[in-house]
Image 1 (cartoon, rainbow, N blue to C red):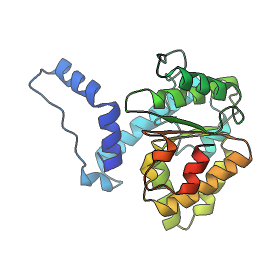
Image 2 (image 1 turned 30 degrees about the vertical axis):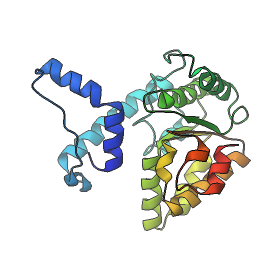
Image 3 (image 1 turned 120 degrees about the horizontal axis):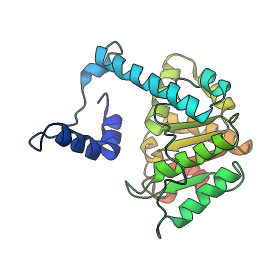
Length: 240
């Protein structure tokens, strides 16, 4: 993996099916080991380039399936399509006793984005379907109005983009891109901890969305009041 954040996400979502695939293709004597590989820090690494090409082909296929607006493809192409899964829908979500309220709130947000449950803050332990549910909202919004721009970002990707923009002195260009977004979905917001500058910038983005009544959906492994090393003003906004 290129960094610790990606390592955490792959362990969280893909370790089990990868292990099962290895056993199916080879045998049970083979095991899966996930590590951070420093060679991926070089953007010209051939394997990393092949992965990027694969993601680009997935993005094109996903774009056709969802009838994504040209504005989204043109202005947010570097964000969209890699992790936004068109298979995450309300129909494929398993509703149980412990997630029924979250499911109902997500459906309400999808039916009336920007008004019902805005922001929508989904929290719970790993594997309970937070990512599935938040992307189901995004998919529903897109199907209802293909002209809407829905942006899904793991918080690690958001942090990387903000840091890169600051280094390149292009922060305003990055913030301007969010003007074209109608619904913003940020996964694993707890990883904003101790990122003071990023928290400040995200607070401004969040306020702009809320003021313009544009939908914001956040996910975390714990409720807002229990988030550690997150600015109090952000936690208060998350708990609106």
